[in-house]
Length: 121
Image (cartoon, rainbow, N blue to C red; front, side, top):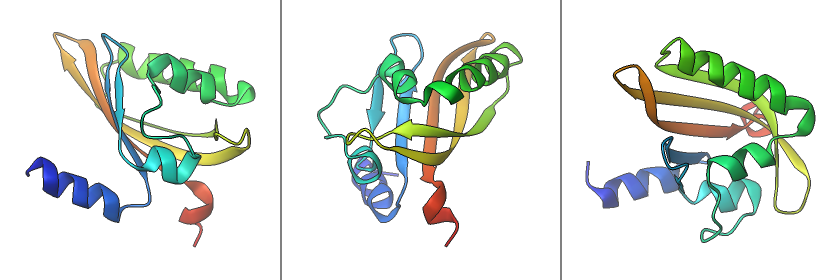
């Protein structure tokens, strides 16, 4: 699929789609970062910034769960948690990722975040 077609596909979606290089922490987001959470496209939302946006009451569960997924070489991971928006409110989201490994070391993940309120309709 061409980059342009992929961009069109992500624009048709109401989800935040991201790719994360787990070695560097760099994350590349689609337009959903702005549409769902209000963050501008040029904000640097890397892996550490993403973790800091998770509601404090949910953070340990998310970190422990994804750490277990990495340790057991799971190819997929999903979790429900609250993520902070640019306006300081929180949204309940459902996060699903595919994890890529090289020699059992997680190197990349590609994920989709869905707004749980939108999923109810």
